[in-house]
Image 1 (cartoon, rainbow, N blue to C red):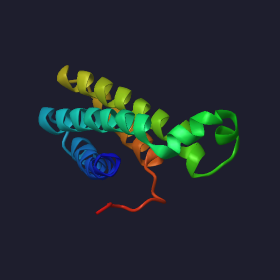
Image 2 (tube, rainbow, N blue to C red):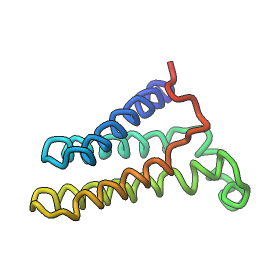
Image 3 (cartoon, one colour):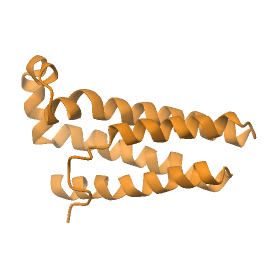
Length: 129
C-alpha cells in the first residue's frame, strides 16, 4: 500500500504543477479550481503517507536528531510538509480572490507555486514506476 500511495503522490505532483502553471497563465475559474483541489488531494495523500512512511516513522523515534542533521530525513520531517501546507493555504486564498475577480489571485497562485517548487524532492525519482 505504501508503494502505491507513493506512486500516486508522485503522479499527482505533476498534475498539481501543470494546473499551477495553467492557473498562472490563464487566470480563470477552471484552472484555478483544478490547481487548488488537486493540491488538496496531494496534501491528503502526503498526510496519509506520513503516517505509514518508514522514513518518517523512524525519524519520529528520534526527532531531535532527525531535524538537527541536514539530509533526506530532515527534508521530509521538517520542510516538505510545511511547504505543502503553505502552498495549500496560498492556493485556496488565491482561489477565493479569483472568485471575487481580484488581481491578487495571480500573486497568491505564484507564491503557492513557488512554495511547491521549493518543497518538491527533486533528488528523488521524477516518476516511480
